[in-house]
Length: 135
Image (tube, one colour):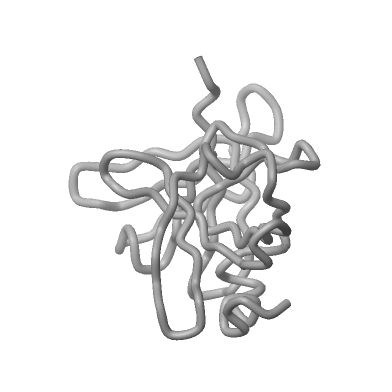
């Protein structure tokens, strides 16, 4: 069984949050926790609008060709096809969406994970996807 891990991006402050756990309440509020030790909260953040201010991105359970964990939102380079792809979840399977010039198509991530290399993510490196098939 794979570990269930998340990373958190603060859309307002444009930075990654260092979190140990999080809670999502019935009203959609996300409470992020960074533990200083076993009993003290440090840098706890509460947000009112889940999905707008904080983007939680889940670990796919797969690793790239260099052994790095692949999270949704990662941008990967596929050398054999000379394409960048965006990792995203659909409702049925983990997929990588590849961009070919003006055409969009997707392919299952598990078919490519041993051939792709993480080059960035959608928050810090969006320009990688703008180039389409060219590196």
